[in-house]
Length: 346
Image 1 (cartoon, rainbow, N blue to C red):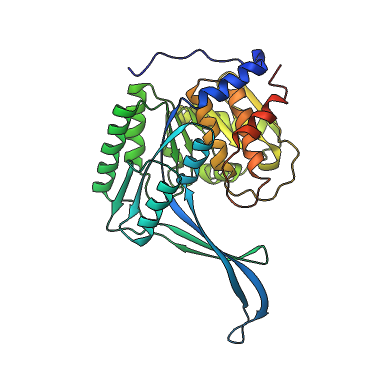
Image 2 (cartoon, rainbow, N blue to C red; image 1 turned 90 degrees about the horizontal axis):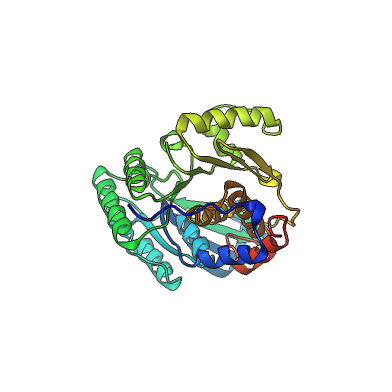
């Protein structure tokens, strides 16, 4: 067995010093992140004329940037909270794959969970920003599942990391790009339960029904409706409770955490169902907010914090990153400051 169970911290008895202690404890955690990784590439420039060749704007490029994206952005958020992330994924044996590894090195992130594939390319999303507005996105990717051999290699790598690195929590960050397969999900959850390591999922449509038995399942509202293939009025508490409770029971999920954009987050487990409203903010960009929510929730799960406190801190974190333009990791000091000034701190 990995370690003895921790005592759940109640959100009703949390002093400000207790909250600071929780944030300090984040720095002692190791997080295994399994998911689709990508490079986010940006071209920034200005538009002053229309092309004489076709009715399209001509952008004069002023700046280029490449950033870590997908599950790698979750790793950046975990790192920003002071914890140690280990990223497990597959990239292409191509120039973009080498660039991805360079970006990991630049951010001082581990490469030991990264495998190279000669049959796939490294996912790259290029955004063209003209006059501060996104004008086009070009995607280079393969969305088919990784091969059976690659799945076996990845499971072996994950098993080795779990054995030697004393992992505190596992995140599945699924972008439907083919890395996460039903077999991988089943095997990793089995290993996690044997080692008593909690698991949390940020799902997409393809594998939505395959994550049975995880500790936290975190879709947004759109993903929930698409995954269940039903529509319902989430603003009606009884309807929301019925749909989520049936799904949670069927999938044997301990906690269902749903992000509801401007309406906040909703947590459903056997003991309670709680709606936590969003804080009033000046929203600049919602990109990457889900990555931040799952990162903070995972750290809270590793410390065995109460579901309500977990949802509250994750909700605060997701809102904070929406105040910045582009995909940015959460600011730990700013999040602590906000948390200290909410009703959870006494």
